[in-house]
Length: 468
Ligand code: PR8
Image (tube, rainbow, N blue to C red; front, side, top):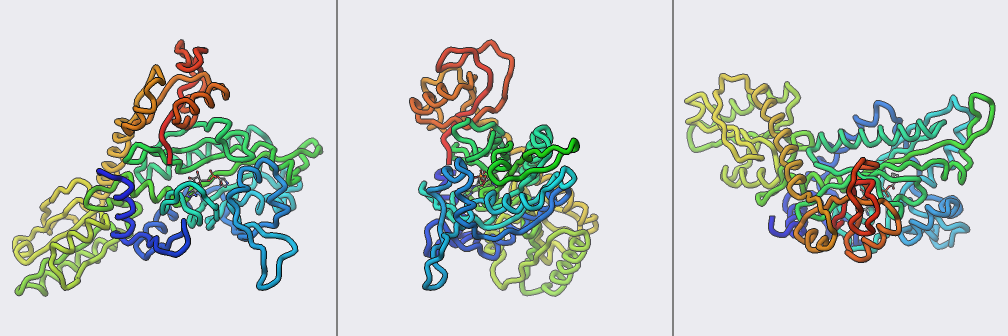
């Protein structure tokens, strides 16, 4: 892919995912095909969360007073909040913030709900739109001002250990999510200057985009007792004493869908992993003058037999050339194509085409087609995942010196280096190299390496990259 940015914008339009001509910067329309992909992604996410979280829905608006309560948090978001100031013609007595995230909407309510240790833990999530007045260059799905698919989880616990464990659970959930979508990722603990406003620490998932820049695709925050103290979330512990609760929150966004598109697509268009493909196989009847009815009847029969196994199937019966149909479904990334023409039918064979490898596989119509298709879908899923991890591996480089780090990230690499972990040193590195430290990828390791910047003993393996 020559120019990823161009490719990405084009694919969103051509594959009919979003329409970014909506007349507000940073906001676009989800088109039917894009919406189906989005829904499939959300289904995976909901399935993963539903086992131990309850889904809820909080209001979009937050009173100014609540938003302003948590000092560090509000500082982090003050330049990004949209405000509602009027109801009709009348100026409101109190400004209402449109949620940039929902801590300050949810936690005052948590404070009402939590009384005793038996009310804990609380584990809730919601999938909502949030609004952030981003000042950096906006891009559809990647950096938007209306995040339409903000899936945020919030938990409350009775001990710091339990909260720390929940952070690990959050990480496991996101690993599974990205694994199911075949997206490779790097996990790191964000530097203190880049953690979520109000968090004790932030664990982040980044994926390397085809242009070598990293995209943060999910974050898990340990909030400690900061918000509990601000919002008076206290509980009576087993000993009868009152304690502030311990909290975590974690979230993903539209970026996950962007990452899936970027990770797998090629010059011909989208390549969707079977889990998120609206349709997993497209049946294309090749109809000439004669024999059309039999071909159609057979295709319908095959469609039914595949559907009976839960495979998502579509049949393209449009009155256009087969070549155009191939082109369209390649662009839209359907994992498999099934072609059947009159001659094939006579010979009792058909062709299965793989979108990921371009392979054409001749199959007998006597075969157990549904299990053949199921096997191929699995293979495609595995292949896409393996390719995406291989691409990540190829882009990673470990450096002993940071002298040329700027040039190296310009060559689309993501850098690993041994770091002392000190804030002052890290900030100097970022300032001098103009490259971001993503965070600590391997924490507290045993090594005799030294920090290339300050010369002190290294403690961690850290990551540096150009970022979105
Ligand atoms: C939280 N509170 O909010 P976070 N466009 C697209 N995606 C975005 C954007 C944007 N403008 N900004 C952030 N994201 C916590 C956790 C509730 C849930 C994505 O955390 O501010 C990023 O992938 O880190 C980010 O990791 C995720 O939303 C969560 O946002």
